[in-house]
Length: 139
Image (cartoon, rainbow, N blue to C red; front, side, top):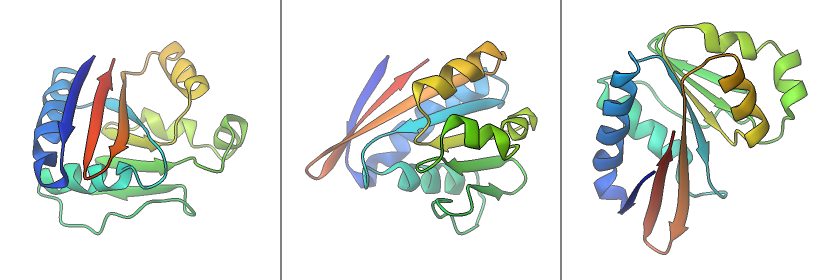
């Protein structure tokens, strides 16, 4: 596990670290983002997408469930969905598309399922600490 204590102006540090880990996985990876409300999950995805030179408006896909940026970055929010609902909506098949997949609110059941199917999965835990965030990357 790698851990970083950063403020919002230092997000490039965790973005660069995660990019290097994703590149080692041939840019084909699912990143499960975990943290409380307003911990910075969507803000992290915004910064990651921007670092790729993609100039699209990144917002939390809470109600749409999925957003796609430049046909290579996929962003999901499963806050109010069970794993069964996620699967019944056909979203599990989306992970077969080449690219980077960010899943906000993905739980341990989803993590275990994805790993059992052979997907590359990284976990990014984000914890709010006053004006900084604690980022922890688990493989």
